[in-house]
Structure formats: C-alpha cells, structure tokens
Length: 253
Image 1 (cartoon, rainbow, N blue to C red):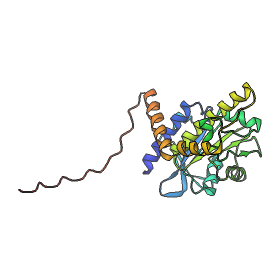
Image 2: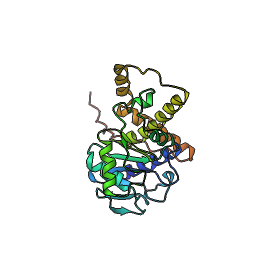
Image 3: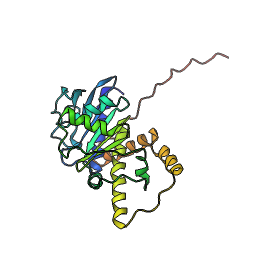
Image 4: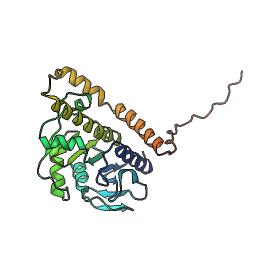
C-alpha cells in the first residue's frame, strides 16, 4: 500500500472502532507504520473521535514519539505506540482503547481463560501492565507497556484499558473487538458461577490457528469497513485495480 491507502485504512479502522463502542470520547488511538519506513508511523490525532480522522488531521510521529508531520496534535499517550514499535519490528499497527469489558476484567487481575472462540485468539498469552492507572505520558511508561506486552497480541493495562497489536491494521482492529467480546463473555460466565471445564489443548490450538489466520482478519475488517460506510451513507471503497494484460494480435490462419 502507498501512504494514501494506509491513511484510508487508518480512517476506516477508526470508524470501525467507534462503531464497536471503543471510542471513549476522544481518548482512544490507532496507528500504522508508514509504508517503507518502519521508523515513522501515522496516528489518529489528539482531540478528535475515532470517527473524525481525516487525511488532513492524521499525524506522523517518529520512534521517539515526536510529531514530524500532519495537521493535528499528537496524543499524549503516543509513547504506547512508539515504544511498542521499537521493541516489536513485527508489529505494523497499534491500538489503545478503554473497552468496558476489558477494563472490568483487568480490575479483577484474573487471566483470560479460553472459554470462548474470541478468547482462544489470546490463548498464547494476555499479560498485564500493573505499574500505574495513569495516562502513559513518558518514554519510560511506554517502555513498561511494551515490555509487559512482550510477544503477545495484546496487554491489559490494569484499571485503565488495553493495547492491541498486529502485523496489519486489519489484525489489530479485529483483535481489539475480539478482546472485548472475550472479556464480556468471561465476566458473564463468572457472574453465573464457577467456570466449567475447558476443551483440551489440542482443540484450543487448532481453533487458535483457524481464527488467527491473516485472511480472517482481512475478511472481517472489510465487512466492518463496508458496514461503517453504509451506516454513514458513504460510497463503498474502490476495488483494487488489477493489471490488465494487453491483447495479443490474432494469429493469421
């Protein structure tokens, strides 16, 4: 993708997250690395909702969390993004939100159990960052979140929110939604009584491999992208332009 296409993906991810109830006014943020330049990333601007991202207000930041371009203000919690990008070269998109059910589960300190299909996506680990409930407004605090995340797909910031990562924005966005769904299911199950037995490791691993394939993230992101556009009565995204082979001259008989 080129820069304009990545910015459009950022805009669409914001709409999807807003529609999923993860906006928390203007406090959530999403970023994507600049294509061809892993030392910089595009990010949602400060003071705007997820559904208000535009090509003009998107900011560009470097791995020190400094704004280097763009029309908007940078988020004060930019260090969640910059420090994760420093530590995880495999990550190309970072999301930080305050999803209600993920925050509620984080308050209990309990692990996420693989008792539902969304939860199985995180069966390889959902660590906690427990240093503070405050906003992550320094390099050191951002580094603490990145270190707590480790190699996982997401980390719960206890009593605060979650940071979710992906190799693509499609992955990070769908995982953000799945994480809150998984936490909601577990909280409801815990309220009903003790958790029952889980399926054995072989079943869990097989399901994990099925639901975390890249095409699963892409298919579901594109569906939510189309739905967000229908809700806002926007034209559908342009189909990718495929190269057309030139016609060959007819052979003489």
